[in-house]
Image 1 (tube, rainbow, N blue to C red):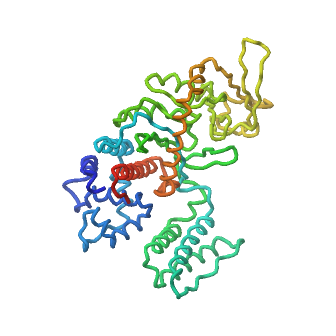
Image 2: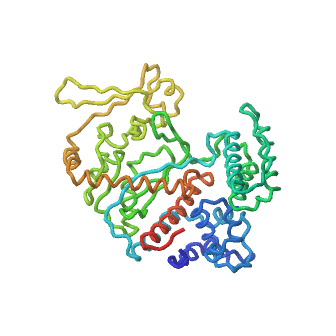
Image 3: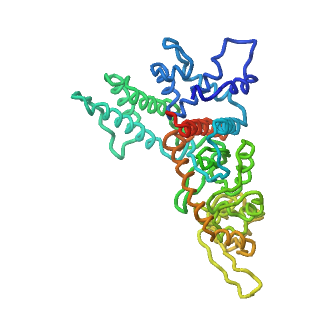
Length: 457
């Protein structure tokens, strides 16, 4: 990566965020950015990436540090994110740079993009304090067990509290576990030190914040009718070579389909050629079909969303839950198909909402009539507008190209399971955009190296 990328663009972009004639000399912004890149490349904590930079010569080489040179304090990474990386366009900047690099290296040749979204849990979410401590302490014990596997030594660990134990008892247990591990001869092993840092950060960082969200931008989104998440959505566009060409980050309740025009426009601005778009049913809306004049939209029709992505009233079809969603984010509890007797009128789908939620809804004015016995919303199925798409959907070409959509699911999995994208590092949309920008940049660099046949981390 050091030889592949010219990081001077980071210096040029951040120059205005530094004072050149006052204060002590700053750590070079390129080096600070490289710390962040290593953090997301290897899914490490702030303490973890700094600690590894002390002894890992490949890290020191990448950071342009001599073997005996001292590393930064972990708190500088927080200051760098909050005070220096304040560019709202950081997401587009890093993606465009990686796409430009892929084109220059001759590894991006496709004229197709695959579009989908993936969700990320908010930093502060509905997990209880006790569950957070249990998960972190279990990971620490697992790391210690792995270290003791080939050793004849044993370490006495405190007994885990019973299921009905109070939070204070579990808090005390975690402190005792940390002290025991830190006093053991295995405390300096990288894996154990990283897990200890994770548990320590949870204990030190105002643990009561985990019970109630302080994230001003995160929202509840639905994956199915019965499952939901609290956080953000990242909408991605990716080529056949599995290089991400565009991304937008929204709150969790946002509808996937409305992001398609933006993703196409951003992909073209990054230098990619877009002749066809492959996507799931959420993107086959009337508006998107109308705008797909200069590219083929390979997206299966869903009769429930033929009306469009969003009506004037703010109702949208949630394709994950397979039902209608009201402006307040509540899902319909049931639906009914009405085949009207008048032959000139098309069939419609009538959705029913929970009237008890309407009584206290902040959006009820103009949406819900007082004393009404039920709240419904109807969609007329107008298949006449989709004859061309229906015919295209039946062709062999459509069927073969649609099979490649699975590749973006694998990319989403890579972001989450390898680069820590399943959970936000900090609260707020701006922090989520920064995490997304650096994570996608790292993923694209890895993919470029892989396509060039070189070893990647």
